Image (tube, rainbow, N blue to C red; front, side, top):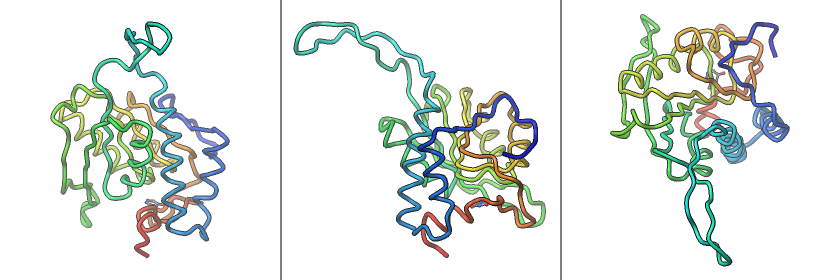
Length: 215
Ligand code: URA
């Protein structure tokens, strides 16, 4: 962990299973299939942490032996929004744990001249404003795409937002939490730094290429 002050909205998930799987994910010899499987498993475990405080209500049910009041999730459930394309590698694992969640997608590219993120795709559920929205992207690098995605979701009416990534750079954490200080951010590690090509060091390389075998 770099020696910088971490904002209060940041949670680093230190569960030993998450950390073990993250180490396997980082290794350059990890195959595409294994990478995809590990990303999915880590995401499922992250979803467990991200949903720890979901509200419950009581439901009258009958077990085979007797009636009882049992806890059940209350209200509208989740929406997971994947930042294309690498976010889809996290989406799958989260859906394993919360299969009823709605799904949104946002596509952003960086304008080569202004370096500002430009939206090229957006599809959200109609009731996104009523849901807890978890925005996912494996790598929080510069933080600009993540910040732009959260801004766009707020414009669409979303009020309850969280952001989840596998790895973060200190620079990305600063940009994202500076732009959206009230949004809880979850990651499995804050790595040392961003390099001159905006790769996270030591990182895991290009998450999209490793997920989809495109390199
Ligand atoms: N995106 C990636 O896939 N990897 C990085 O290190 C940074 C951004």
